[in-house]
Length: 439
Ligand code: PXG
Ligand code: PLP
Image 1: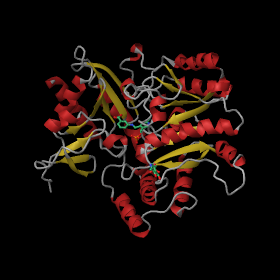
Image 2 (image 1 turned 180 degrees about the vertical axis):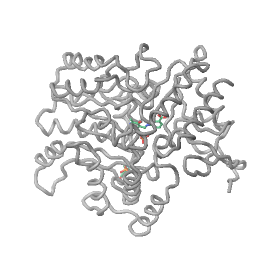
Image 3 (image 1 turned 90 degrees about the vertical axis):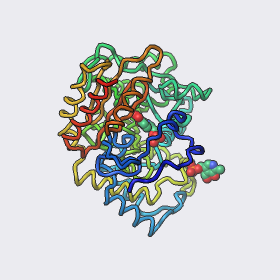
Image 4 (image 1 turned 90 degrees about the horizontal axis):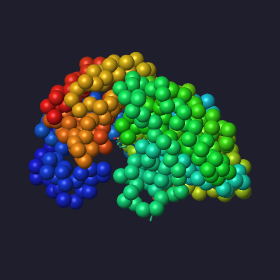
């Protein structure tokens, strides 16, 4: 049943990452979902071009997850996470560890990507302190990186509008981004640019490795508009981190759990980090949850330095860390991931996705097309002085035509559900093509 929204009071809700004034003039309500489509307030079916916000890869309203959530909420709604535990958290941690590349097997639960990032950064700093090297505290991110919105995340993040309003952040440096003009319209990973990783050597020369805790990057940059790493780049970053004893953190909040066509970005790119961050797809978006997965050696260091057994080894955690309902949702979501081989589905359909998105290369305003797995983006020619306007206008034209697409900066972003049929993928890009021609 479409919900009556005309009489809603729109005054009190301050919407996140939203043009609140524009939204109030032109509200867009999503009131239901079915498979890979949303249902809007007029009862229209709208194709979901971004799996929600990159989080619903198994499709919407999966009964198995809904039932697991309901069952858990009826039998144990909440259990304290500090000094006590419920069994599901252990089951989930071992299940998640089994999906990880070799060596990553100790899991700390959080409730979002942003909390995951700040947790990972704190683990990195505390690890060196516990190893007797407290000077190793500097954190290095990358230009155009998105690591959520908490203070640690915006410190290493490299998207200027997300930082500049908020004053001083942590002491950080940023590697150059890898969006090179010569790689425009490249399919998948570009050939050129691996040497950009060598900037890390320059930062080591500047600060000395004895002052650097960790480097954090997204395996492919997501929010900045899907920027796949140049071939060999992540390998080079890994080698430099190894050479100088710097922890490598992969922020897999988007790349993790299927999006690349492999369980993780680490698997796909063949590079194993010391710490990996997950959120979003962990519960298929049904209940907020995140996880930091670390190498056993990092965990063992905390245990060895923890003092008497009854002492807390890592003074960090959230009221809702390992929430029983979130664990139930995640276990059901990971079961679907296994049963339906979601990563293999992506790998099998990624070529078609690539052909479809690159089919827009010659459309009006399209200045670049990038893709990897089930992720892709278009860079659109800006109005003079108004880089964000064109993507907004095109996205609204798509919405009017029955497609939800994410816009941000000068890009449109696409991340279909892993279960999406090839005809629906083709429909996404037909609609975008029409919207571009009409813009
Ligand atoms: N790290 C990465 C790599 C992310 O992509 C976060 C951390 C933060 O997660 P939370 O759960 O705190 O939002 C993200 C989130 C987009 C888009 O349009 C991307 C994200 C969130 C919303 C929209 O690309 N990424
Ligand atoms: N603020 C106050 C006053 C609190 O008591 C707590 C938790 O007890 C928090 C913030 C942190 O909340 P959470 O553990 O949900 O992150």
